[in-house]
Length: 232
Image 1 (cartoon, rainbow, N blue to C red):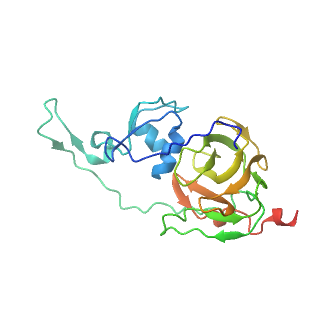
Image 2 (tube, rainbow, N blue to C red; image 1 turned 90 degrees about the vertical axis):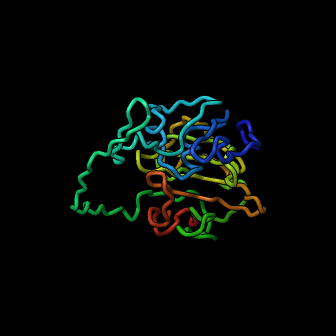
């Protein structure tokens, strides 16, 4: 059992259609963004929510950028809601400079064990990697950061912890048996944050993800090539 109150409810599709979501008591803006594959900064901007991103149960939020919010739309609507005027847009033909991503961003693996399932951008249930191990073995923070979600309200993730490391990167640790950190806690790299549990079909493992600007990326491109925890 977790040291925090368990919640059997799951994050569902927005009840006001695909463009809206009504906030539940266990939600955070980060967990909603995570579920829908959005960047939390975009979600906050679309809904005019300022840091620290406080939300309230019952509140409705947009899951997309409304046309009137998009500067790229080039459309202005008059007070009567008719006669739209299109503003010409100048599009730059200059290619953006390529940014070389670091091969290793995090210096720590999240737990001991071998990878049993690898990341695939084309498969919906392989947004991260699975690391097999033993029940209740330690799960560690891969880098310093702030816990922005600690709960079990997201379908298919069980007891989940999400850590914000920078404005760009988040890491997530799913299917824990126990969560040892609460939302808002600041953790250092290597801090024990959870213990390993089982997924929905009874396999003992940690499902680990890294997201860059809200999008899943291959964790093996950011973790050290060898898992030193295996040698301890």
